[in-house]
Image 1: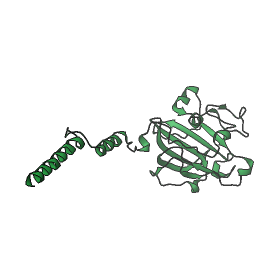
Image 2: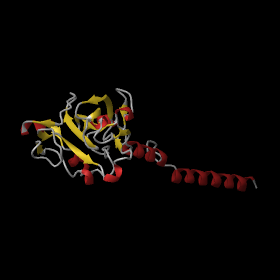
Image 3: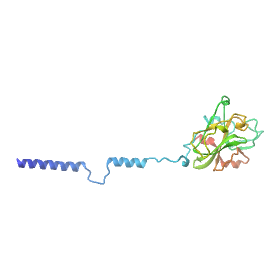
Image 4: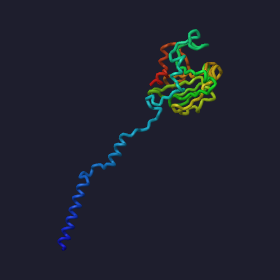
Length: 224
């Protein structure tokens, strides 16, 4: 009886040892499935980036609704004079440093919203001759420091405090009333200029074609 009991206990012990070696990995350094998944997720995770340091146009936004369709009179680089211009009356001379986004007849007595095209600081908001209300923003486009000029805005509508960071697509203000001091006596439209660098330059026209190299054509960015 005792011999049979001892024999049974030995069999149970052997079965336990066999199960242990079959189930447990022989290499104690082998990672568990949970650890492997965690490591894989860690290696493939994306680190959030500061929008101001991005070198792509992924954060670029339209300055006005249906923007490309509104470029009908003064595109980038157009040479104008009072005797040769798509608008009348014309009081400027030179090559157009920005892009003009026109408004429809039905919008003349409506509030037309203007938005920041990229993330960056609001560095100026003031009344300027030829513009009426103007806002200036600094940000980066494709890795380059740029200065954005939003002209012909209603000055009192310009949002944000100086040096406040505006997000791409954030409301900047509304267009001023056409042919009034709000637009510097000009028609109701948005003049948007993009100048390379951080120096503020409000010139809407330059006299030498080569000087346009200091400016970017916003319509090219809208087409990307």
